Amino acid sequence: MSSNVITVISKIVENSDLVKYYRNDSQYVVRLVNDDGSYAGAGETVTFNINGVFYERTTNESGYAKLNINLQPGDYIITADYGGCKVSNNITVKSVLSANDLTMSYKDGSTFNANLVDGQGNPLANAVITFNINGVFYNRSTNSSGVAKLNINLMSGKYIITSSYNDCNIANTIQIN
Image (spheres, rainbow, N blue to C red):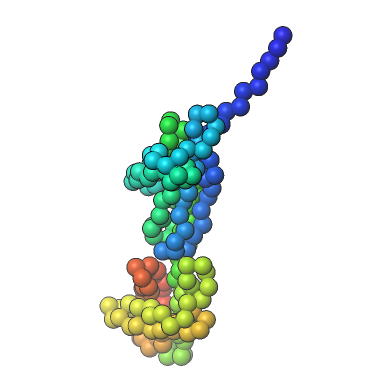
């Protein structure tokens, strides 16, 4: 009795999960393989599906196909489809903007602070963050640590504050006792 070893080669390789900051240049990349195991050349079409939206991209001369990821912060699953072979990976888009809820006493001098980082996670100085609280908009620049501060001088109550930068928006609660 003899046996043979069969090796199944995926047609889509060099794919991996992607963690990126909002609006940085990171791309989701796959490499395509021909039936004989060699890398595909230029002009092969791969279909990407992310959140039910389909994108077609063609390979370069080395068999790589790339998709720019321009999604809001959150977690996603991307599927690449080529020649009947499908692979899926996780995409995590991290927010460049962060802040914590604020609980304070009436007129105690507290500030609401929002933190801003660049596409590599480093503090972003001298950028303008827009705050919206009670329908009033305030623009504040970030300091060298990437922090923009807004003085809070409101009556007792609970408020929602929205912080915005480059189409990235976050919402927090301010509780004044």
